[in-house]
Length: 176
Length: 370
Image (cartoon, rainbow over all chains, first blue to last red; front, top):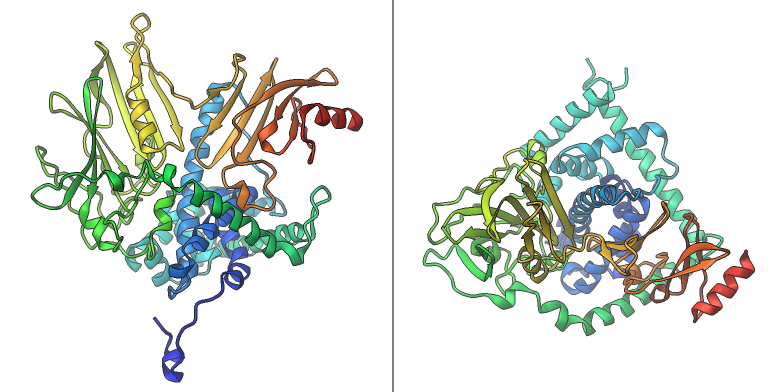
């Protein structure tokens, strides 16, 4: 959908070039994947995979009103899925008496490492809501659209996530 | 007093800063793999183009597992579509698709999540667009309960229902391919608000004339087989990164050991043996492959990325099909010819040797490096 400004001046929306889109969004996508996956290397791969998918369908994706939302969705879904596979893999490796490997998180203060580790322990929808809200900077309606649920549901996910996190991290849930 | 809101916002800033640092380091180039910033996007696009050409060339084989090519009949209600039906020992496997879901997103083939793979997402032009209601009815079964839309991880996702129905009519399990969002473990249901599985999580059945209790969940490229042996010991096996044909193959290969009464899954390759030494294997999960090497408890594990060709910084080739066990300085090592001539040492140290076309040359270089 063209924006109000586009309509007002009669501009036909021209799709972003993939390159400019990639340059602009890559860092944010990596950040989102980073929070959800806990691995910087995996985050890069997740972002790359999502961008690669977008590139293959850029004729369609590039004309969407929010191409970034499309890529975010792919990143988010794949990150959640990957995390599950990693856990399964870790269990299998445990059975095989082979130590698991997970990438360290560079340059992240210990408090943040703890925080995002707890976020990843949340139910996936809550973790996704938190990541999309705080990392991707989406609004409630945007998150609702991304997750395919109502704003009220997103609000519930966020509220429960904050409550759980506050309890686990031993901090206040709200300012009294 | 710090609130959780403060922590989250501060944590978000930390993440952005960490990512910015990581990007900066990446763009400025690491000592071993210089990567000029100006060439970064160009390199990515060039590699991407090559990767896409490979994908296109492989298109036919990849689509051979696409259930959309296997569409069969629709039931009278028009709400579900049988896409595949197969026999396994003691059971019939049926794959069903929710027609309403498929059509509502306007896919040209009426199939939203066309294959048990990540490809499904690439065909979604608007992932947020979903049907208002999901209805499931399967011929011969009572109306099935479906996850509510606003709760649980599967409600908004494309669905592929996998019904494993015993020949006596009992429903063994319903697994839902919900675009990678089904919980494979029963214990995790506690965290899945509103999730209700149709059919019992564990069902009695007979396989090869031996009793077993099997819990099968197949999701996107993932299969978990749970069973309880006669002693009551819960056991499970799992793998992922599997296409639909592979899932069928695995399900069909479940056997119960007549002596121990323990179930095993023939051809289950969660840890695939690549040689006669049991300590060498490849864990394949669809996203990455970990080459696991163990000699006398000296473990190394190297993860390769499936989409390495898309990643200018990936260190390993996407497919590792062949390993050779070698020794360098009397230390065990693994040689992966297809991975771009990398030599991996058994003590966890990885040394990459680029441009070495043969093992002998790589070994010679490694010797020089000490």
